[in-house]
Amino acid sequence: MLIIINSLILRWLYVTRRRLALEKARRRRQAEVARIECRQVEDAGTGEDPGVVEEPEIGIAQINEQTRARLRTLILFAALIVLFERPYRVGDFVTVGQINGTVTRIRIRATTVRDLDRRELIVPNKNFITGELINWSLSDNVLRIIVPVGIAYGSNIALAGELLLKVARQNPEVLSEPEPSALFLGFRDNSLNFELRIFIDDPMKRFRISHQLHTAIDEEFRRAGIVIAFPQRDVHLDQIGRLEVNVVSNPANQPAEIKDTST
Image 1 (spheres, rainbow, N blue to C red):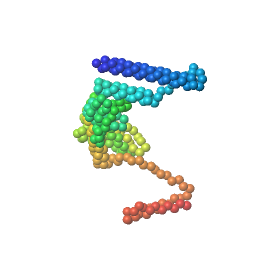
Image 2: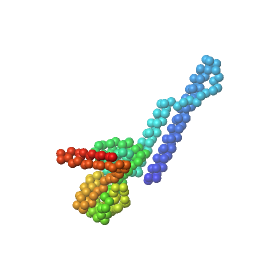
Image 3: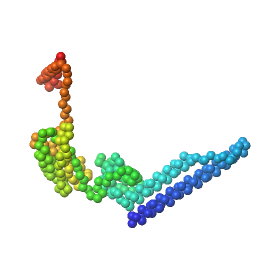
Image 4: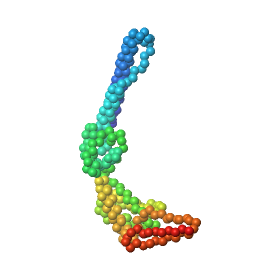
């Protein structure tokens, strides 16, 4: 059935394109005839040779009409693809361009998407066909979430992996199949990098579940004495003479005054 529909669509596009080309050629001929007649009238009054005729130009109105015709063709073509191939359906969570949301209504010219702020956005169907479309729930609603975690050097790597898996298994929103995994990815400048990878059954829950996982990981690491890494730098002062630094404590909780004397 889809093969027949696609064949009809391609045939219709070919006929429409051919018709536009013939209409364009007809208008060019009319413009050329009008230009020749005007030139002949001018030459008859001035005595010049009417043999040389410049190529007529296409007017702005003709270009606009051709653009509108192509746009109408593209809109109709996109509507047929949406209705018959069904790359998305009502209730699917999609990303098209910079828009993320749930499809609430599909019509011939446009689709209504409710974003995460519950705004109703009217998106032309051609944006779904000609642009980049991600359907998070086309075949199923299962979605993977990756939580990156960096711990300080010297931490217990085995314990960190066990705690990450513990957090995932204790969360009722995390699917047991596919099972969660905690991976030690490598060494970085300031941290030992881990990733907790889990699966959920609803793309709309990913922000709430990410919040729950981050909170639980922080609590478990605090209990175990594992420090979450942060950027650190060692500063070395290279000076010819001796550098004296005096740190003066301030009981009024004011910033400490640092006095340096170099000789």
